[in-house]
Amino acid sequence: MAEGKEYDRLGRYEIRVKGKLGDRWSVWFDDFEISVEKDKTVLSGQITDQAALHSLLNKIRDVGLTLVSIQQVADNE
Image 1 (cartoon, helix red, strand yellow):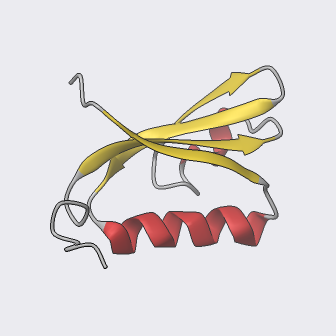
Image 2 (cartoon, one colour):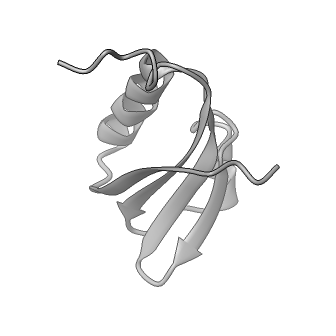
Image 3 (cartoon, rainbow, N blue to C red):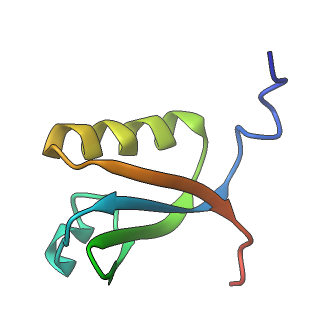
């Protein structure tokens, strides 16, 4: 089992889902940036810890979106 400490901290994530979401969904998804790439939507933003990540994934499930990928990315801000 992983230690968890290295994963349980603030990080920037990109989450890709099938379908196209408009900017109005940003509030529902914790003010994440929303961009569309062909037939996918990319949600980008800071996640404080694993609990917040799972909360966001639950929202994706609740809306009925198909999860394509989750990636932690370098924070360029």
